[in-house]
Length: 280
Length: 297
Image (cartoon, rainbow over all chains, first blue to last red; front, top):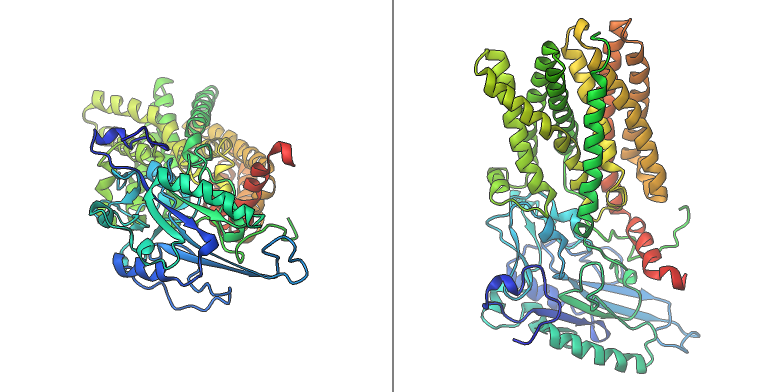
């Protein structure tokens, strides 16, 4: 294996030569047609229960958000906003994007997990071991994307999220969502290859007149060290419900413990001072 | 922020709200109280105040023994609580805290048992020392735990929260030990309760000021109610505790108010986390300001 990009704290070195190429998703939203085949295929393969049959009136998005039972979520943005430059007279855009777990290089969920249920696979992805998770809930508010969630139905109580089809990957198969995607909006493969392909595609898309086109999650210098599942978006991330500058909060753990150390020392000093003086 | 200028996706939250129930609010309160009581017990022993040391040890053992059941009840899979001790993960404050709480609870219980049964005096004193040294860590690690999330009202207060938790721990430990100790021996506990309460009032005010618009959950809704109630109870409690040396009845009412106020403040912090996570503006606005950078803005 060549020197891989986006190495993590444990992949590939902890696999002692048995590490595989880091696999990931590149979701090219310019060709997403909003068919939701990815959502359905994910549920079928991973035996996920339904997440309610709710009418949201938010364009065609009746799924709402990623969650414990929803590991792909197609966002629909239907607005009177020009898609191309020069269409200001008759503005209309319909953006669609299939969201998924980002499989961060520096993954907050994994870092804060107290049981070791969350782990880094030999493919560099982040997976929950459902036989270890005790449902403490620590990963849920830690994730800067609101991906991982606790399943409350049937007293399950454990945290669930996209596994990047770990079971299929072990057999060299493409994840269910990417297999089902009819337009190759969801592309699966070695992350290094996907990143090269995406950089070239971005130039083409920009040349075609999509002024707002950008890659989201490709930079190793962002707050999560780059995504294992990254995107080509046509506007700012928050338009799609994604955070514009996500950060793994554990990056600042050192300063948090230092603050706690100082506070604890002052507490000791306060207790000692209280003992100086009268008994009553 | 009165007008909605943030670009978001149908007003939906960007991050998931914490799933923690009321048990965790009580745990923040009792863990802080138990931790600081252990430290007070050790300090009292070193200062040769045996009655105060034994009463503070008892308070700490009772408070810390209530914590594991609360934490286990809040788990999605309570039967798997032992998985907390499967590994020790330095990057996980909950993992580090579980081990520390296990050690602090065991040693505080051993010290209290030695006192009550009048047996094993030397191991009992060693346990009191160990519990006393763990006390400040137990009182503050929970602030690190909630700061180590993407919840804006917690993460952006990561420097202030440990101080607020330490002050609240001092206030509630002082108040509880004060109520548990005979009048002739309760002076140090009363002073600790008073100093902790004044510090908590000042530090929560400072935290809310530093948070700016992110502090809105402390002013509105359920978390706002808890925050206001906490301030009122702590202020009244401080006044009554201050006059409590000469008027023990007023001091006892003051201590009870301090306990109520410190508990309310923990619930204010816990529920502010839910409100902060549920409004996408709190997540997006600071990140947008950061992403825009000093050059482009």
